[in-house]
Image (cartoon, rainbow, N blue to C red; front, side, top):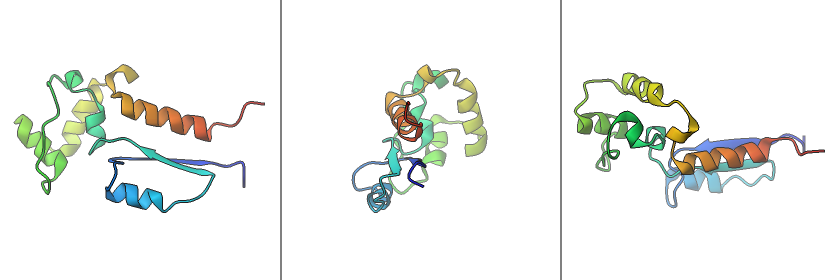
Length: 115
């Protein structure tokens, strides 16, 4: 019905991306699509939280997660490295502002209006 709303958060929502083209096709006042500029949600974790200065640049065409792991010289699978990264996050302060802003925007959109 008109009172239900759907909020969708997309990775890598930047101009010209596949994600942005798909999102642009949605035209419904009860649906909000927003996103963050990160290639992957890993990048939304501040690098200092896991003890690095910055997330490595991964050449286009190379799988991003595997490229990051290789560049960092870590012997891990993407799943095990994500578990490590996630385990270091203790609060919202460990996350980058663009992700936090996108999530806040979606919460505001889907929350019931105040009486």
